[in-house]
Length: 421
Ligand code: PLP
Image 1 (cartoon, rainbow, N blue to C red):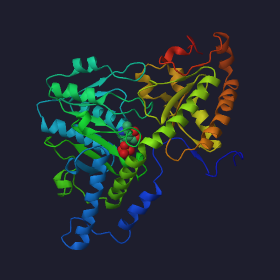
Image 2 (cartoon, protein in one colour):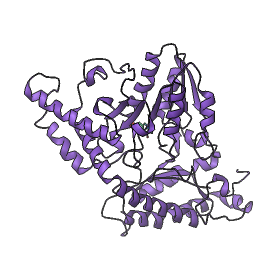
Image 3 (cartoon, rainbow, N blue to C red):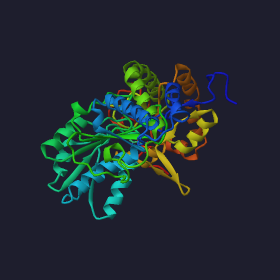
Image 4 (cartoon, rainbow, N blue to C red):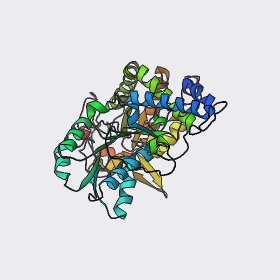
């Protein structure tokens, strides 16, 4: 059991970039489609056709979330499928173009698909990023070639929250006649998304990041954009995505999109204040701590922090013991801790990357959650450091430094060890 200061909930969830809790209103909206309204929307009789009308209503709501028309939105099974579909379609509709550009910090939903394309003989450029996680538009311009089939740049990074200049990327692509896709899976509900303002050709969404269930996504395909379906089968989604519709999840996505649009501005202000409070407190009280990624522009919900001398996986385990869910920037594979490809691409030193955790807040987080976290995290970091035999030695080589402003843009603002054992 955990301390009395805990909120009534059994755990504190600070991993909303991984997935979100399905909102009660969303559950309520989808339930009838699992109970009485279970017909197949492709059926000709009314029992089926009625169900189809609810899919169209949901499509309108998802379209409204990104300022698209409903005809420009197809439902998919997830964000991964949306990303794969957009890139694959660009290649299939432009068979002479065999070059794809994406960034080195995309989600594995993009990176691994592009690596698979390489194995099939396509050329892929993984655009490097700056130390603060941002991209260099001039470099992008230089990288685009006559045989580039598509440029895919995420809207916001899932690990650092860094937001990319998608309108500028899309304008550049348009001027060079190359389709532009953006993986916007982490963006809705956190920042406004407007496909008309940004001018992208394809945009991916995933409902489970938005308080709807897992297993439903959407792909925006700008009107008049050539499209080759990825999942080929029946005539669902006007022939653009085969497979009997996941009606309950589509309806759920529609409801979640509607709620996100309603609540977004106010919720973001509230959650941003909580996030900033966490960041400020931790960076100013824990020596040798630092933020990974640009301070702005950034999702208001996300912070990625390193605590030197601490193995993130151990810290995660200790936080879990206290009922606090966060994630790390590293993954434990076959016994060794591999730093995240995002932090590696940002040139974050290995030791610091291994000590990084991601906190991602959401609509259910409260001041009590923040208080509880701040009460325990600094103590855990101190305990783990004192249990680390190399930490004492490490301290002998550099003075104590605290980030007293939290305004540093430069990730090197906190002194880094030149040598670690
Ligand atoms: N893209 C980004 C940026 C993500 O964060 C995720 C999920 O974490 C995905 C794509 C994959 O979405 P899904 O889980 O719906 O396949």
